[in-house]
Amino acid sequence: MRGNKFFVALGVGVLAVCAACSTPAPQTQAPPPQIPRITPSTTPSRVPLMVDRALPDDCELVVPVDVMNATLGQELPGEPRIIVGIKEPGIGRTGKIDCYYGIPEKKNLPDAKIVIGLSTYTDDLTARTRVNESIEAERAEGAKITEVDVGKQKGTLVEGKDEQLLIGSLGKSTFVVRNRHNFIPKEKLIAILPVLAVQSMTPPV
Image 1 (cartoon, rainbow, N blue to C red):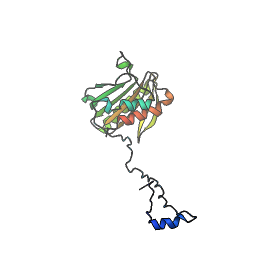
Image 2 (image 1 turned 90 degrees about the vertical axis):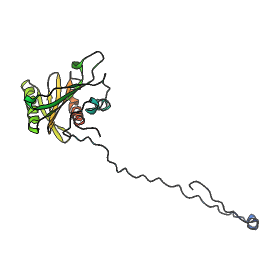
Image 3 (image 1 turned 180 degrees about the horizontal axis):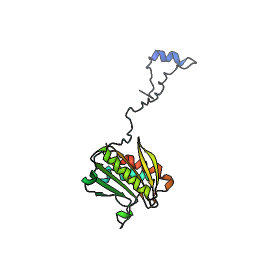
Image 4 (image 1 turned 180 degrees about the vertical axis):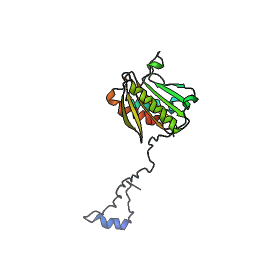
């Protein structure tokens, strides 16, 4: 066992002889301490994977509050609120939800700092068409339009005067992350909005 010393029992006669020796009998050395062996984990860390997901019924399944706060680097006030939209067969929309984050106490939905919306449509083409129509409407209002990476997908950053949003589609689903009232500084938009968009399209494990 590690750290234990081993002693050899000697007969009385042997001890008497060794008592006259000038050189003491060598003691048995303890075994060297073992160096712990560290085996790297073979379990891969979870990487967000965007999918054409079914609409969740809770904002914690869109972007959890702790993920939102960690991404922003600050704690948002209040609790997120969810609004379930209606189906609109006329435009091919089969479902819609909006999650409002950062609503101050005694304030309402318009005062939210971040709004994340997910919608589903009848097919991929309809989803892409709705995104393109939204982008062109913003462009007509004078917004700055920039294509950005959203995970392994592409999205469009729309920078308006009072609101900036990141919009895109994946399969039959569309996503939009809105920065309300210029809450996130413009120089940080590309670092933050795509992270929230990826999370919103990543179902929890």
